[in-house]
Length: 302
Image (cartoon, rainbow, N blue to C red):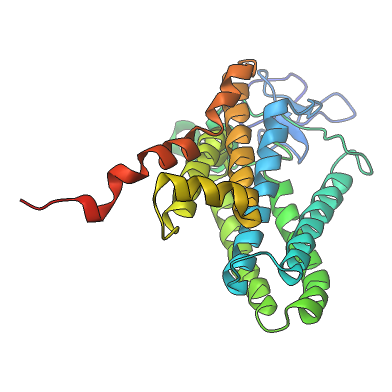
């Protein structure tokens, strides 16, 4: 076809041939996306801050799951050097997987990413928008309209598993030979589950991860305090400032909460005001101040 004509559907496009002609309507090649004229154009956008925050959320969430599994299998009230070694191993694995993933994305060997900006939720689910002109034959135009935000998460998970299998067994064998191996088994379960969630709900996670981060940090903060045997205000405050493990856990909750607040502000195009940072310690303070009102021993049955 010598004249560019629009294609049916919102993701079907035409490729330009060297002789000036255009191909039939179909899916654009990887790294390309159809424009308003149905021409396949290369993805030359630069990821915005929200995109980087989303990728950071993917990496941080995997790291938090690693740490959670390590603590669960270690079953230690404090943080001995054996557990610290496994935590450091998890950090090394996630950082290495993140760096390698960024390095192999186009342009190769750079920390920059050439991308197609996500404009709406349907960009993540082009499979559901294959048109059927005149209700006859379906045009298959499934493509990665949010290149490379969709596929690079799978690449990150794959490298995360591979690097873990290369490093973690050596660390676990030296520092925590009995329980350490169970943290590896746990990761071999949750990485495929994360990949499944991303395959099905990647777009939903992209548009809602700030609120997911805020909600999970608040719930995790409440669970952390709920496991304290002494629920008095004085005891909760003293344990929060005197126990090293409690201090690290609370600071981690605050960092996650702040990350979610910053991402939510970025999603709505707002500038992060310093007053928003006052929301970071609010869940912990709210629990400590209201714990005495929820003591089941003080409930009286009529």
